[in-house]
Image 1 (tube, helix red, strand yellow):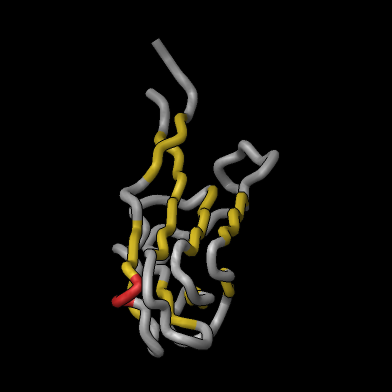
Image 2: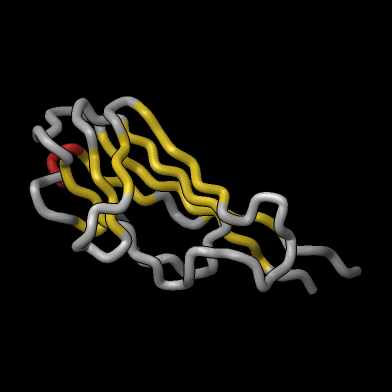
Length: 114
């Protein structure tokens, strides 16, 4: 029996407040597949900045908030827009150091059908 592509989550990427410093730290491992949706949640008491190269500031996530990027919304073709395989996410504090909580990233990919 044939079936279509199915959504699957990669392992949760988490950094505790003590791991979020003035310089960028890797948040989990690099992605293993093309990323269709990624969400960032900041459960710390300080703003967090995210980078996709460990150098440039790309996204700022306010304390106690989250952001979702669905780069394949309304797009079902496999040649669409994705974050590439091997994408590494990095995080650092934006201004003051967090003293509690954690920062996490959720990644959604798609598995092929048979």
